[in-house]
Image 1 (tube, helix red, strand yellow):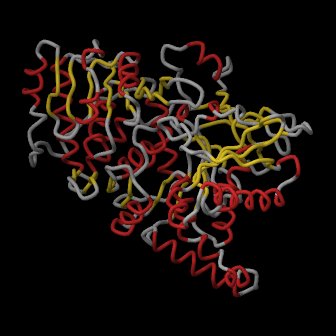
Image 2: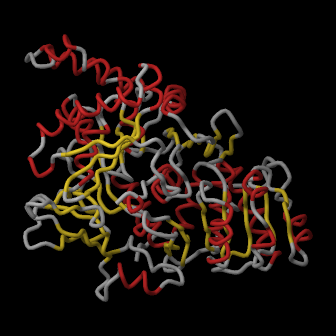
Image 3: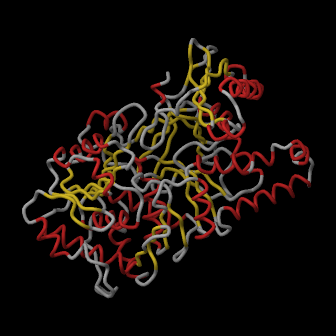
Length: 548
């Protein structure tokens, strides 16, 4: 059990950084740490007046915002359990999550609440608007009176508290903090039961190992309802005393780069897809020119060119970051090779919602090409393989970060948590002699070639996805042959004047090039153009099972 409680982390940071900016919506409102303290005190008064007890569930449905973060902090620090719901879920799915989680209170973005049916969530005492902290609907007696008594919907007043008098309830780390409904690629969401201890372990490790200091600035654009963004773009920097600027809309690479230029963050966290898009749009067109290809092969000259490209990219990311941390999905192999070649300050971590999320990480200087760091010091990791150095096996972990269970789903829990406490991740990996973890892919995605060799489709997909004109791709197996299903980059297709037929010819050329790079058993036999984007989960993972 981690010694420092989550509530203590919150309390200490708020008191130490009282007058400093804590949270800002990009081009919107800002809260100091004192403002956060005031909001917490008022909402705690409301929860208490409503009779909410430790362990009760409070659902939170909305896009990233300052007030989303404030609600999260108020719930967890009260001892209730927050149920963050990705705003991409459909109304019917939100109803099901709210009901399945036994939530008794709902905070919702107005537009999302308008699409829901309050009557289909009968356990709710009421619902509150995130943006203004006002009542949307209620059915519980005394709801309005408790709300008015708390003054929670009034503007944040100066000096409603002081750092000396501010304190939070001491919530034991063995208590449940979060019910995270993560939608998998093969079925409906499961409620991951994340204890305070898991949050504390992630915060503790990040404070001790990630390059961020009190007062630093950070841009938050990952979904906060997902554990990766929540832990490392919000909770960790908040407990350190940083200023977090939140992009409140679904961010495009252009908007993200604009925010980086203005905020100049000290640490950047991202999913690989965002970085790959920036690389694809800004770097590949430059290095693909015939003259540039020749120059990049000349010793000394290539070093000068790579340095200039790196400096240009660093400036695009704000020019002030110490490290770019990637997680949530595999990093495109070609992109990573180029980033490593030009000595860009990036690293790749590995985790999953069931670990709140961190499993492995290492700094950019010590992470070898293709690795996802080393297991964190609050966890154990092993590979279920006769030779973890050369034969990929399932990655298994146990320790402080691991979830308690799946909520009200003992069958699913038993499938992933064994009697010795090992969590079976469903991912395949290798472990070198230094403890560096190399992820090969998902067990469910792995294909068996006609020669009997294992094929990891993600490795092939990364080569296609780096080609101009390819929007996204998946590799499937049909009649013992590999087939690439490709959805074209529509912007590229229109700008370059490609038809369906001519874009297919371009992709067939890519197929020849990529097949030459790969062993025969990994060669793709056919390209099939997709007319629509691939169906995805709310976390934007492709539902592979629909295309087998």
